[in-house]
Image (cartoon, rainbow, N blue to C red; front, side, top):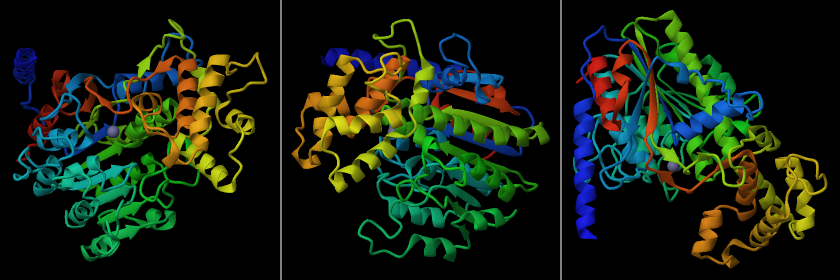
Length: 482
Ligand SMILES: [Zn+2]
């Protein structure tokens, strides 16, 4: 076993050495004034391809609609392992991308001994006189956005991260809110007060958001948040709720200046949907992410020689595969359209029923399943007709869902089936995904590399196969920062 481990380690190191030798991180052209870095959290090739296949008319034909960034002229593959594991988390992944250093999962911009702090590409851009903006669909103190402004031994120290945001002197923050605005024990100074004291304008509703203008140091938080701190899943978003593209557009308006800017945008809930094996929510959030990239593309059309856009993922989530044993060589992506709600939305619905005492009989839930997932037992001609096997698995899951969480049995089998999520909901997403030809292997991240796309000045450097730390070194060279 030890020998094998050593062998693996040697191969690993050789591969690493080859990768860093093979990629070109040295830029010699005209430096772009405006740099956009988009990160689809949990987004690898399967997430991108599934979205494109969903967008293609029926999904049963092999033709594809391409997302905006899939059409970029420079494309590469990026390894994502961190200092402690082949499978990274978002904290170590963003540390690699933003500071060029590998660290342990859970750590933000500090070394593996948790003593040394790293400087990020966003801080370097700021020091060079550029304006800096950070946009995300999850909370602003979450690992990926925090990776540009915070240095923390643990990504879970939300309040400390929020304080570092307030003191970052960055120019614009947009999207979600804060997980612990008054600290873990709710006994700290309100983070919004600290933000205001540091010279920021706060926009907490659509009117104030609209009023934010060029040059105004600002923190803009979506008026309607799903769980108190992250934006709604796209599948649940009502029309009057601001989108990721809206926050990206506002970022450009606020930041635009003669010295240029660095604006980073995260599609954070692609990851969360994939953790929960909810393909439709992941696909629609990837479309929302693509819409925000389109905003940057429009900006680039006006500043063609001065703009660089990079789109990447920080890791893959869920072990998503296009193709499933039950559907063999066929896919039926049109079937996903039966789903009208995110897994979180359906969980909320179940919780309400439980509270009202109406979640008792399996038969009672069938019409609600039909309404929200299209899955039916009464129409055998339907694409989404539940076969006996599927129906039985739903009954099993319902039994667990109907129990109080504390009474539910806990064992490896239960984990493999439901991954700690609401059993009935996850069984429903599994069934509809498998009918479409999508399957999952994990409720966590995986080690498969991610695609990286680039367009504009300096984009050539992003062709090839390189490590996530190389994204930092390429950007550093392209932006001429130290
Ligand atoms: Zn994740």
